[in-house]
Picture (cartoon, rainbow, N blue to C red):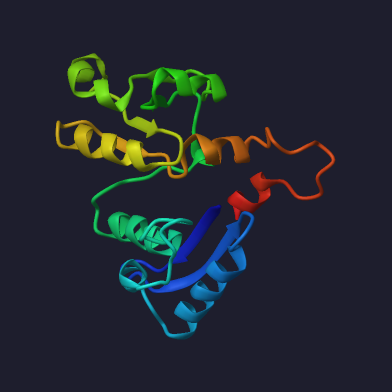
Length: 186
């Protein structure tokens, strides 16, 4: 499931969302529609107590997680750069485990698994912005926190390699009528 949440700065008022995925997407959009109607903020999304079944998912719903991510951005806890904003000169850090790289990489990246980051921190450039990614964004978020607390200028690539694959249309045949590039560009 890919969630693009639109919110106002600085108050975090929820303005809209796009969600792409399979089962349950309609329910997530209904939650966002209700949040918009109720004039809720991303801070409210963090605290929604949504029903779940432990055997089918985690206690924190994807809507809660979108709220956490947006709140972290608004509060300056994490800075982000979207996949479509990457430039060839950017320093890109892959914090996934080496075995995960068989599923693909972002060209020109450097791989230092999160578990090894603290031991290899001296090998990273302090004169460049580091753009960290993992599979979905959680480990790269942790990496950005570690690096930021050690004086690095760092940004998280939200959605990680999963979003990168979608953006590159790797899993979409060329005959598709609408590209995910178009969805993420708006």
